[in-house]
Length: 166
Image (cartoon, rainbow, N blue to C red):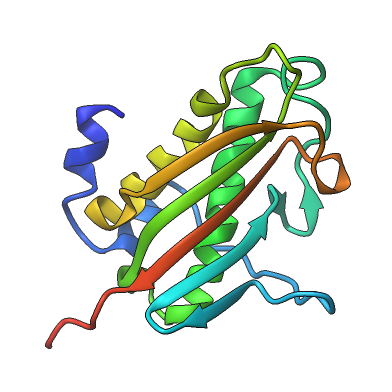
């Protein structure tokens, strides 16, 4: 993570930082089989999110064979953005989201070995947008395959930051 990410994340609201990055939270389509988030006590569990944009999966294949590292990093950012959208559904406001843990699945060849590099792109996005609330515990693992042949899937655990007094 660069120092500019840390300093940029300390100014303005999370929504303003997201907009400054040229990004917007997507609308998540309902699914008849699962919910995008479930709250238990103060924890919010975010279902695994794929790199969808406007209803389309942005990539398919195995990282290290069909998908290049930089493409996988971009897909991880999109999946993290979708996970943020689910977190906002749960807490109502981007400024109230705190990421506790992120689990990054990378469909990759057995010898790829750069799953953490793919995950770093998602971590960078969270910190760029949420600042210190975006810093998290993390696991990045390689898997043989993911739903719909997606190269990346991201699951999160979040919590809600108390509202600031006006």
